[in-house]
Amino acid sequence: MTGDKGNKLPRALPRTSLDGTLGTRAKLDDGSQKRIGDQLRAMYDELMQQPVPDRFKDLLDQLDKKKAGSQ
Image (cartoon, rainbow, N blue to C red; front, side, top):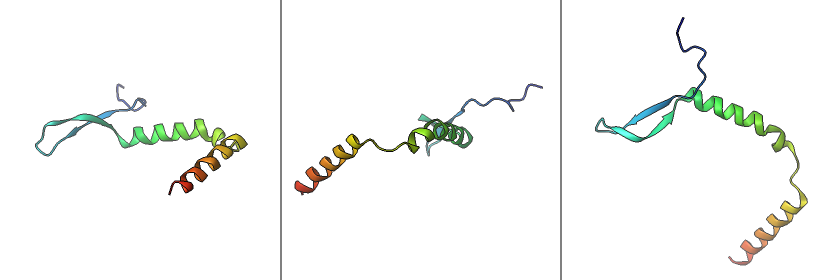
């Protein structure tokens, strides 16, 4: 059996313009986009559960104050 059933590599689909010519950018098929998204979420899930360090909160507060003062 030589089907691509087990092939999990992303496939780039050519985009065509209205006049039928090929576009200059390729687009991943929906299944590949979903797999990549799922893998990224799995990789970064633990990181997203960690609290924001106080130093980052302080920097964000400073930026907000500076932005509010310039308006």
